[in-house]
Amino acid sequence: MNNCYVEVKRLVYENNVARWRSTVFSVMWYLTVINEESKFMWDKKFGKLYKLCITSLVDIRESDDVVIEWKSYSVKWVAQRKCWNLCLTTVILEKGI
Image (tube, rainbow, N blue to C red; front, top):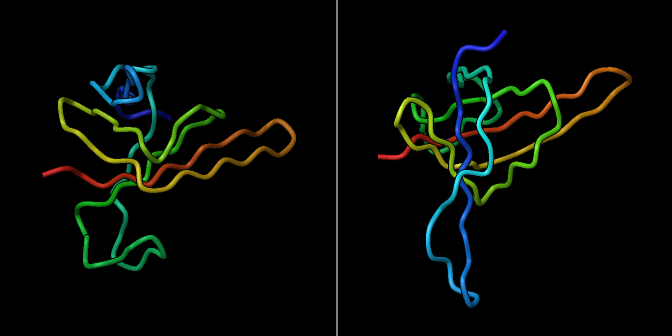
């Protein structure tokens, strides 16, 4: 079940200097808001932290940015699990200002 179109952007380096962000890939994923009781909640960031679930293993890093409906989110945490036929990538995002 997917509910949003996501674009992952990563820094591009020229001569060892970060110049801009380029789109690495785009895909449909499932996005939910993290509730107040979640173990991922810290520093009273309710309403700013989101969990993105991807039903495959993808190359996403904590230095990446994610764009959903023209809004930018920073990747804060990534976990990948593979068990038999199930692959899952879980990403914690923080909404930019």
